[in-house]
Amino acid sequence: MALITENTRKEVTEIVYNFFADECEVELKDIHGDTNIINDIDGDSLMFLELIEIFKKKYNLDIELKTIGKYSVKHPVQTIGQLIDMQLLIIEHENKLLELDN
Amino acid sequence: MSQKKLAFVFPPFASDYPDEPFTNLSGFEDCFRKFLSRAAEFADPDLNQFSIPSRTFLDDELKTQYISYIQACALVSWFRQKGVIPAYSSGYSMGIYAALFQSEVISFLDGLVLIRQAYKEIKKITGKQEYGMCSIIGLNQDDIDHLILKQKTTLKLAIQNSVCSFSFSGIAREIQKLAESAQEEGALSTRVLNVSVPYHSFYLKDISEGFSEFVNQMSFRSPKMPIVSLIDQEILLEEHALKNEVVRNLFTSLNWYGTQLYLQELGVNRFVECGSGKGIVKNARFIEGDAVFYTANSFMASFELK
Image 1 (spheres, rainbow over the protein chains, first blue to last red):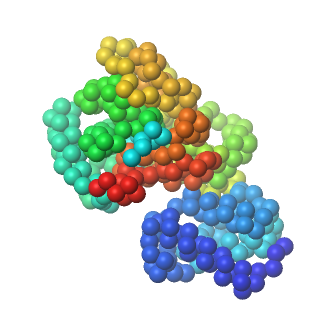
Image 2 (image 1 turned 180 degrees about the vertical axis):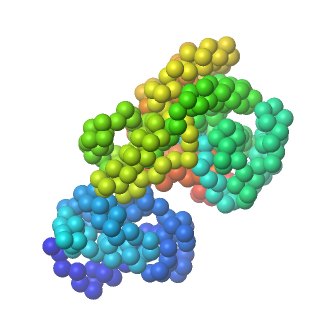
Image 3 (image 1 turned 90 degrees about the vertical axis):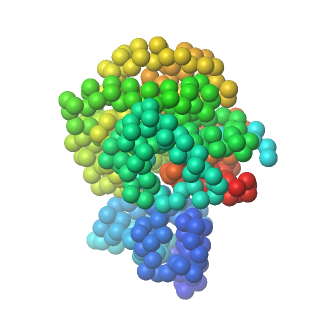
């Protein structure tokens, strides 16, 4: 179980913002915590999947995609801010993510 | 510009039209309108009413197929005028007809004839039962096999797009159930597609004989550029193989994942999605290798050949 520091949050936020600016071909300044990923910047679930892979490699995470999928059903992500929060939870809890709901 | 390692990929028919998909393609609109006008005169006068902003024909599978084909052929023609010729081409699902046009196997009008005939044959099946398709993203092959077993369904894999992206075809209620089960199993995304035909599944095998007879009466020329099969990743060079591919394309599972990898083995390092969408480009994020995938628009922007 990783410790989430202010630096981790900053790093994750930066990666997520840059990722969506690049993938969705939008200006970095147009991305905010409350930006709706699908409606505002034409994002999609494949992008979410790619981000997960980026963080899996970066933080050497032990987590199955379907664990994230099951968690997402109860905690759907719509905005960039929600996505960052979920990525931090994934980094912190890895395959124990679902235990948060117990 | 070296084009030795360039492949054109022709997408299936669109489920939506993005706004202004060809802004970097100077003069493309005129080129498209010429093709559209010929198609309207030959196949269906309604086609002249097409406009992207009003999302015309999205509820009509045949007309949507025509439009996707017309856009693809217009792109081929526009690229030819710019001297952009691919080393290989491949047709994803109903994109096969545009791949045949690109390789000069068939004429533009013959492609319309094939689309119309295939659709006519398909309708013989779809009137008897409600069919559909769904996409599942975020589960791997083992998870999918487990789901199929658990559901005791007759559904079969229609298309594999990557190690974690699949499409299924079959009876509509089973498709709906599979999508729901996949969500419960942990799929990151499931979507029931806006189609009424179980493309690339054995449900269409019964109509293959009639379609085959029709295709065999048509004249196919030798391809000017090789076409790579999405079914078995063979390079299609002979008339018989090309005709066989067109027929099997209706009822056989496609492996887009394997086809992309094979094209990379052949040395392809740039792919251009020749349509108005970017579904193939998006999916490419999960394909191994260093190849770069472009939309027609981003390809032209990259190489500044406006």
